[in-house]
Image 1 (spheres, protein in one colour):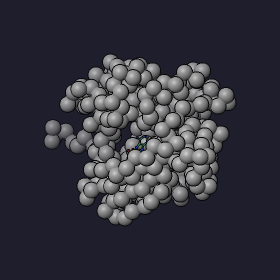
Image 2 (tube, protein in one colour):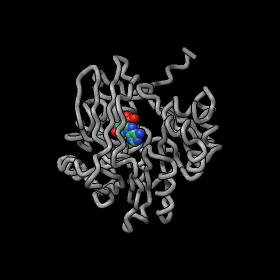
Image 3 (spheres, protein in one colour):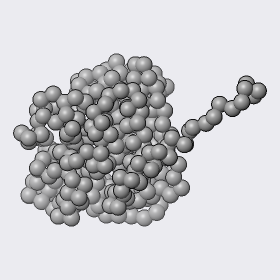
Image 4 (cartoon, helix red, strand yellow):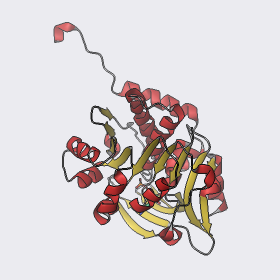
Length: 309
Ligand code: AMP
């Protein structure tokens, strides 16, 4: 099965209480593709960079078997740059700067050879562009999309048009509340389902994730880590792990969707263990599988003997 990822490619400057990195490879598409590469290869990626995008960054993508054909290089522009600073509470982040550069005029062009892609993951980009991607594809089997508060408040009409075309929406808890205008997350997810997606996944950072459909609710814990260095890209790594597993198995059953949520949480948990994408440099498929199995132990319990009932 094939997987297409569309989103930002960036050079990030990240500050956390544990250190700082400058101009490191980032972007929503990069995190999604890297996480998904543990399940599907090659990954088709469509994005844009400037002439200053480092050769080593391209090589990093290649080591994860990302096909570079869909990456547009605008020679006389700079690459999209983003800076973020995390507080002592790593759930709180300030955006320090967003320099769109080449990304400002991003108009995704899907190469001919990608048009029959079966699985699609639309990173957080303008909902109008997300639709433009879908218009160029023949008939994907499953479309997963991400969005953010910027589009929910800034371009709600276009976002609602795009939502009608998504099978799965992945959002964080505050975005789900904002999008549905509802505080309760279960009700918010059901409200979002009425807008189009059949499945809503709500990411709750260190509190895990829930998958909600009209008939199902599945709650996955986050992997309890003692050392978290940098939460950047965790949500995208989750989406990459989720769609990567579905694309590999080509199985839409409820049980397999639950497995995909756990694989999403697994990839997200590795992502935050080091700065940027560093943890993926030496992360093996065996480690991914081992942690997936550890998740089962996290909330498994025995019913106990009947005398206590
Ligand atoms: P997350 O931690 O899931 O919010 O993702 C962080 C990644 O999103 C970083 O690598 C940034 O380069 C990228 N990013 C930040 N702002 C934007 C934006 N407005 N559009 C697209 N990508 C962005």
